[in-house]
Image (cartoon, rainbow, N blue to C red; front, side):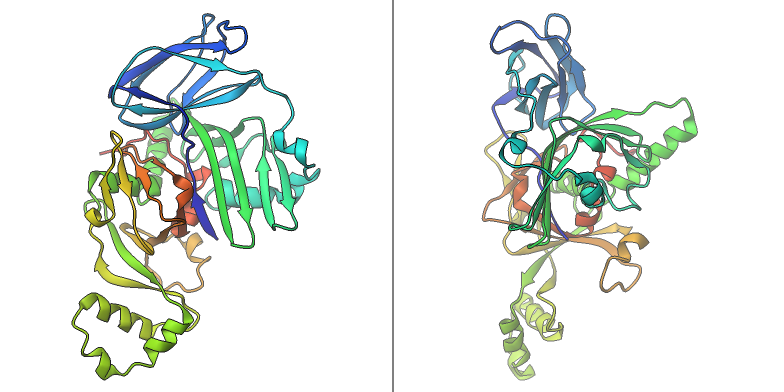
Length: 396
């Protein structure tokens, strides 16, 4: 199953100074009166607040990066605002529109009345994680989810107008998740989701429990997609154990052509990359469709400066293979592989769905995320049960 890792939508923007605060007031768009009890949080972080009787709020200690400010309440439409930490810091006013109670998609089509019984296992597997990953991550309110399966499109969608609640006992987080999109395309064997999680750290008076959480978080972070994005941004791939190589897609016609070439013809090739490609294709089976070239890809060939403060552009052609030399494939993932040679490092193939870059930030978040397609370890591992907040920093 390939996994489309889509993160955050971009709406209106606010710019903040590094290590600053964000303050403001939330009002009703129709009455212009302040709203009390409105939840406000930075998506993918542990930073949140609730408005007081005057509708005021404040978020402190914002670090560089791009975030989605999520403003949400049961009786109002969610308001998502893109925040770029870096330029100004002034109080803001946020307006909220009253919302209808029914789901928008339900107005158009009916949903599956036995949705959870029929599709709950699929949702848990693709979104929460495999039984091995999610054994200690509990979905507390599955009854709020609605499912719709399109027989003609062969796609499954899930939607809700309530927040999803997860308790991750393994990592020590309670996750409040505002789901925007969930779709499995059974024709293309792809899965995509989009949403806004808020992390609440669990508390414990036991030092052993805190140590276990810290250890589990560190192990989960190591070799993760967030770890890789931060390494890309900071140019620390080698230090963090990442290796990046070019992956070439090969058609059956190309395989037949190259296998028909004589060894004498190949000996005349002077370019090492080309010789590597031809030799790899000659040795793969006819059921294989791609080859990974040996030379490492320089980070400067796939990352460039962006016009936006604190962001960089991540772009490549064909596909990339990402390997992490500090983490071995777990047995549970190895069981899902058609071929496993034992004692292998985790690896993932990355591709871009169209000819557009994604934009990466120092906190490990990235935007234009619907462009990024993963195939391999991250497609298996990057789930709610392994999510870490963007303000998480591993122990030094």
